[in-house]
Amino acid sequence: MTTENHTEIGWELYRSYLGVLEEGSLSGAARALGIAQPTVGRHIDTLEKALGLALFTRSQTGLLPTDAARALQPFAQSMNSSAAALRRAAESQGSGIRGAVRITASEVMGVEVLPPIVAQLQETYPDLKVELVVSNRVQDLLQREADIAVRMTPPKQEQLIARRVGEVHLGFHAHPRYLERRGTPQTLDDLAQHALIGFDEENAFIRAARKDFPLWQREAFALRTDNDMAQLALIRAGCGIGVCQNLLAQREPRLVRLLPEHFSLTLETWLTMHEDLRNTPRCKVTFDALLKGLQAYMEA
Image 1 (tube, rainbow, N blue to C red):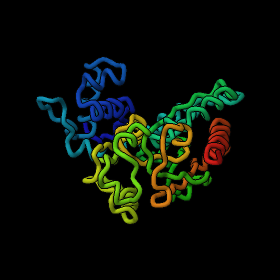
Image 2 (image 1 turned 30 degrees about the vertical axis):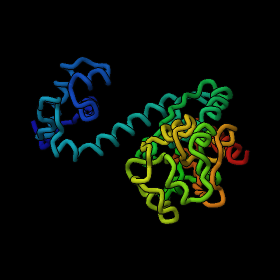
Image 3 (image 1 turned 180 degrees about the horizontal axis):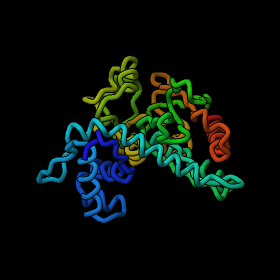
């Protein structure tokens, strides 16, 4: 059977294909999807026959995706996001504020800032379900990967509603235990003698920041991680000097701001949503609650 027969391919086949792509094996995909392993295997065989393509090759470590499988991946992921958005829309039908809203935010915002706002939101609307995607990867709202996004850069797509929330200020911070052990730097040059906490892999934001602060590069870091929450945890544990939000540090009197007159970064914060959701009750109340809560946080 080939696609020339115009055979309709069921979504469950693509779902199993994505499961194997993500898990690397039939057994892993079966566990993740909650179905039997032979069923996943049949789905893959049927999909390959329907498409006329080999999607996976067997290896000692599992199933390896072919170039064809990788080429089809973004389209299947878009289908998956649309199916999830359809489920959220279906759950919201009926009277009152109900159903699921999918919110995406960066690691620090999602873990440190949003939970109290979400708690108040669910206290007000107990039938509302919140899916919180915590990732520094920018989720695609146009492809319905999420309903609402808290972003640290302004959105560029015209189809998105965007509200500028305010500015987040970043600075060098350390725990007093570290400063008692290693001393307090008085100049930027002094940082070269300290244990700095920073990234392992460079990104666009880091490259831009290094233009003003040349020291901020991988080779200078004694502790490296690309997870922002891990960096914050290392600062709190007294491992070294790192960058974090000034507002978060102010919540913890034990964190000390360092060299404020020499180092400061500012990130604009935006709240965005697809314009098609502006009149959807579950999304509208969530958008308004996030805007109010984030503004209160930044004005504190």
